[in-house]
Image (cartoon, rainbow, N blue to C red; front, top):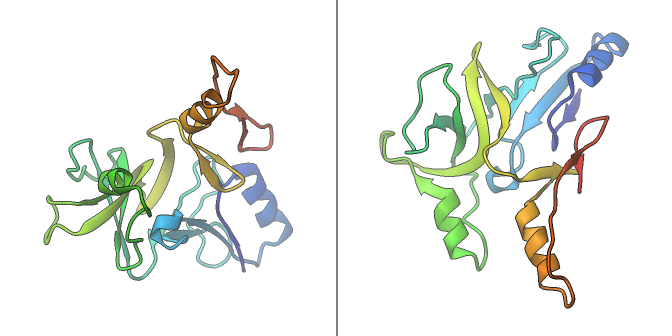
Length: 183
């Protein structure tokens, strides 16, 4: 068993894994730190594989104790097969961000449209339920994942602009050939 996560899985690497170790299980995991790191998983190879080997790699199903909802901009659940923002629910959610009340209020919200209005973490990730699996579609904002860490280019720009002598700053993510980004 090998578990990957932190960055979007690359189809060519997952296919190579399957070719080299056809009897081993490769688990694609997804989950931000705010939801105890691993919130969902999908077997990409092995006896329980749910991936067909194509370009679209699933992030799977929520692990026990975690629930997932895909919502629109008004935090209303979308129909199966429709894209929206992925929200995670359950007891493993973080309390919030230390000293960042405004960000906590924006990201940890009640989903009033669901029974009991459960508390949810708005991941900022676009996703869809497709073929019985969650599929990651990218970010709703400009955050990037670099070595498994979320980076907001605007925060980097603001830090640069706070430096003496810096009048203008622009930070962009440059895609790397093997996947991922650099600034």
